[in-house]
Image 1 (cartoon, rainbow, N blue to C red):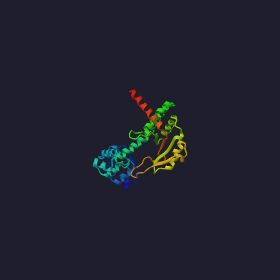
Image 2 (tube, helix red, strand yellow; image 1 turned 120 degrees about the vertical axis):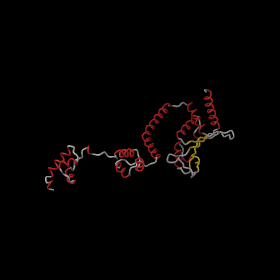
Image 3 (cartoon, rainbow, N blue to C red; image 1 turned 135 degrees about the vertical axis):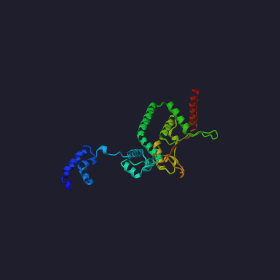
Image 4 (cartoon, rainbow, N blue to C red; image 1 turned 90 degrees about the vertical axis):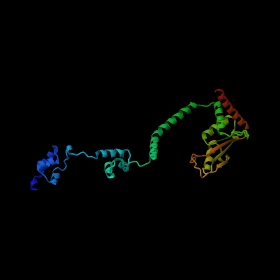
Length: 281
């Protein structure tokens, strides 16, 4: 070590030469330091000049591997594409997010859910705006307008007499409270008094029957005991019902007693609506 007794002075010279851009070999020859360990200590912490760095033959592969990883490829897929080892791939891409191993169908479904999460509120706002505009256009209805609406509503949803089975009885059934409300207002317009109305609930036997009965009784303004016997629909265990939950209340059947004359007026009004439409075509 006597040759390197003034180590700090020697290191100062080595660092100066390094910063001037000399290679290890040039510094070794300039300072006559042929001991590799000593040379390493002299140059410790000093980076090599750029010109001394050899181009890495795998740089292009590394860049391509990272690009493929970002596209969602797995190690196996990258190895098949580039022909390099998994250990090299792991070293090159371990800082990148893991590949998405879900199927294309699953990825598409999740992408659609994310898109809907963004677009859903926008579409819903547009929907509500359109409904509000149309609602405001209706305004107050005249008696003639209600007459026509009620007749059309009954002809679409009410029972109708058949040529093979004459039965001119006004029986109306629906599950929509709004439809029931319009129908009852129309019956009042037609001069049908409340004492002529009979109400009955029809609902699946597996639903909340008592709750549905109370709901419809309250809706039409009668006591639950005044309702006719509820019609229960048998539950088929092989069928998956979608009309379930707290909002499912079955249907309300509204029957008008001694309704032969009313039925004929409904049929006549409907025929007049159809004839009016045809005459304008």
